[in-house]
Image 1 (tube, rainbow, N blue to C red):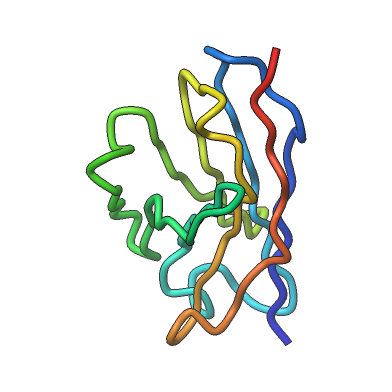
Image 2 (cartoon, helix red, strand yellow):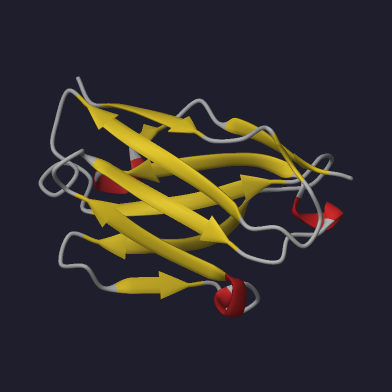
Length: 116
């Protein structure tokens, strides 16, 4: 069974860069995921799609975050990585990775707090 696990720092200072990793187990990031999506949910708000990387390596970003977001994969480690630059307290959220047919695979999410 495919499982996803997000990992990264729980606390980031404003203006710094955030890097999160999604590790895929029980399957292949290229054949089982299709796309590795990153989604976040700020406190008290809905889910926000941030971007995705296809198995081909093509990337897609939310227009509102495109200037600060980069998504990459390391197929040898079965991982995809989200990088978000110049974070502010408004980037505080639970961050999820998701993929598979109909986004059937989701990680549990990881809390990221941006605070000095």
